[in-house]
Image (cartoon, rainbow, N blue to C red):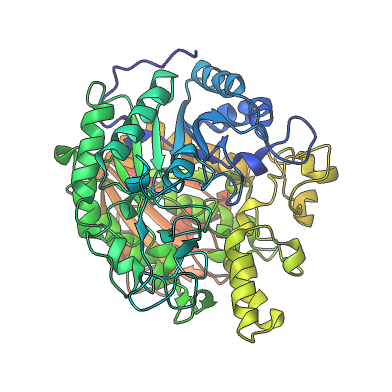
Length: 569
């Protein structure tokens, strides 16, 4: 079993840390079967060490039928053979620790797989000892089970279709907020909670350094389930704070300073997030909020897109900055396995502007207050893949959406633009390691298509190359480690009325930092009062030497460029 890193850490060690997310299926394939695995992770740990990250968040590698690419878990205490073995995972933990990098596991406990032993026992009979480990309900009064409209409530699954599936054998429905193969656990049952806590302690004993908790704020459901929007009923439920505090006491209380806990919380607002992350409440260290990545959702749902302006994006993130300024903590992210590539979404993926916008997005995120998360390939400036049609898609969410809407009469041609723009498969194309076949991801046929631009966008072409996206990320990570004003300083939004300029100040002790970022192709003439006292300041980081010179010598910020200046006294 791998040794743990030094447990005697400051309570808030993660304020100066940077987390790197690995989605193993798409990271690197070590055995040539076309699917990423733990051997592939081991083969590329030098990349993470070069980048300088402090923590790796590993997306699920537990045993799973892979209905939702591992977020449907059938055994929490084993590794799925597609990814390797438990011994392989122990080796990953040990190898990371040897490099001074911690490992955070994905914790998926709102639901299990329908092939988990708990659910198989639960559905065996109504009298099963584990029957109430899940949410079972009879058909709606006056209806026959299995017929349309007989579901206990009219809730819709986040993956399309009803949130209830009929079980013929026992004559009841079970609840699943996601796929029908992901039945929701009943956290009202104390035995469920204790089983989860025991599993968490088991992983910590193996050397794991914390958990990213998948949709954790959905686990507390109301006592009575009624018709209406499922989100309103289950987000931040009535016992949510109680459950998280109980988890902290049961799992982390003996070593509360050593671990990292981050809760993924769709629908959470600033006030609730402040409570979740208030250190005195002992719940979680930080949350993943969705507000900025949900901005483009139209009346028809996620794939019905509406335009998002930079001021909208800026206002959202800066409100979270000020909202958690005095108490609580932000997680900072553009990308993850559920979101499209940031350069295509928030930047400019035209080949002329791609690198500059990738670096500017990084400058903004990594000089804000909070803990930055880097999703695999983000540090290379990877972009969305323009999928030609449904046959190239792999994600259950996108495929279910297309099937449901086509059944209602919509055409593929109508539906594909939304899926291309924000479908989760965009984030799941293989990491582009080289310009060679399969982008250096696998010697076999990759499980999902490789972006053709890997011949230009790849790690080999960027390592050690001054001005590359990768080296810019590396410099930003080092800046957070070395500069307390970045890790701990307060935040002051600036020039919020400007349509294309993202500007903010940071302050800590006698240090001041000013970030200026352009979100347009055109040069920006900077307001003179914004530069007052900054023309002679040191350049902490910039997307190019020309960008820094343009700001300090001419008061002009070039298109999609950014600079952070620092001064003291």
